[in-house]
Length: 193
Image (cartoon, rainbow, N blue to C red; front, side, top):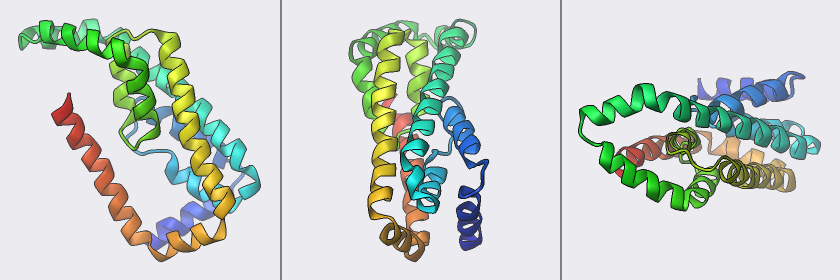
């Protein structure tokens, strides 16, 4: 089954609508969707290496725009949803301390999360909740998400077929490791925040 899904993804990556699908996935991943856009970046670059930079660019733009959407979710829904919950549990004062710390290091938090497998949507929403300075948020997002997606695309562009052979040979292990990293990120999130 995993092999069929991989083959389907590789076929879809060469489709003329793949860039739109990548844009949509990258956009919603930054605000609500749990699956990273790498699931399309990798096969798209491997299917069409000459478009590597365009693919990374589309992914970066969509991810930053989606991040602004996530910021909006945190910013506009905190008063109506988040604050009453914090008050109910008597944690509003603790949150205010967290907000001050988050805003002090916000650029670094956004930048670090933007290049790691840590769920970026958590950072985008938290940035809105804490009202992190919008230009700081956007610049950090552009730099970190761009670095991540252009690095992935660049490595795939440079190494090409050997990377594809490696992925095809170790597909099961790579999916398992990816799943562990994804679940580990959510577990870390639960205990760190």
